Image (cartoon, rainbow, N blue to C red; front, side, top):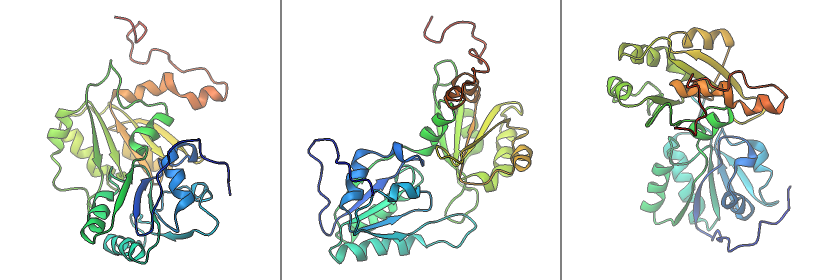
Length: 283
């Protein structure tokens, strides 16, 4: 266990009977916040999700109990109601509880539901945001979700609802028309339908897309493709969840901003992938 102290500062105390809802970031332990690290070292019990990197759990205290509460599509998973009530039960036992969730707990992480249940049962909570995979994971792949020359809007979409199906409430035409860049969470299972909906809504078949799996971890893979070819290319590449999908011209910026390739000594493929013919900061 890493025992290095936190930087000096007035760090909050995780009190008995409290539950802290905390984001663990997209995967890389280095992307954990200091507030999250502080919580890890104080908790009596850590209830963690499937996407929390096990190296992060190594920072827990020596007497901390770890409880797995992972939810993965297509696999046996804990029911959300049972997870929420387990948090209530542990808090009422006087435990100092850390609910550790991948990414940010309030970005398609059901942290709001868990927090609401806790508050309804009289349990005090603290919220610790985390870096969402839809931003941090794409950044690790060299893809900015916003770029002045590409987009003035970005839309984050979940690829499935409570039933595990593509959300029926989504207006794909409005989403397509309203945002230059789309970021889709948890959509691998339904990409055939999602891509068809977007093509029917008028998005171009040759629109750049990227699929980033196991973002920010040593197992990260990045597939650059197009909206029309994405489903076939995913199958050919054998990609599996967890994945973030980005649709839009910002994907082209990976040709210039693939910093992981630069770290291996590779030159950028194209320093002007948008064909602007000028530095981005000019004009």
